[in-house]
Image 1: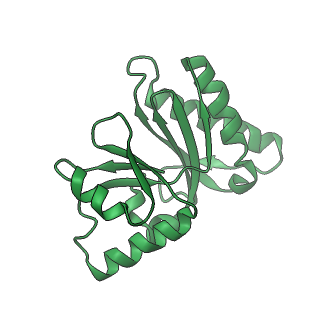
Image 2: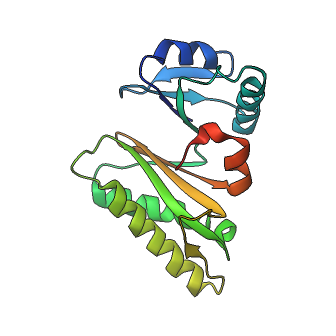
Length: 174
């Protein structure tokens, strides 16, 4: 799980999250990583906390569980591994409006966030069309968003439905 922290909230966020899972520094400013056994339960706990105490999550920037992860050493390897991981979500994208949202930490000047988002979106659109279940890239109220996170040479992906994005506004993918 990748958690970005708003300016000045690092210690508060670590305190908030430590009862929910193992929290560690990521090596990047205002970003921590977590290990949790049940990511959905963590999201529910955060949603319940926000309902009870609206300001409790004020210092959270973005909370994103990762379903598939990989390591890479070059931009080319990132693209190959991200493509393979993204294609694993094909059944969940069939016939849906979607887009790819990438948050990159590291590889500055070597990976272009926007270029990688476009590339993965195109790959998924073509694969869906070839499978006979066309989907389409949209930024206007998509059915799902494919989130791509990188921390140095580690990458991770997850897929979020419109309903999940509304239920867990702290995902903040757009």
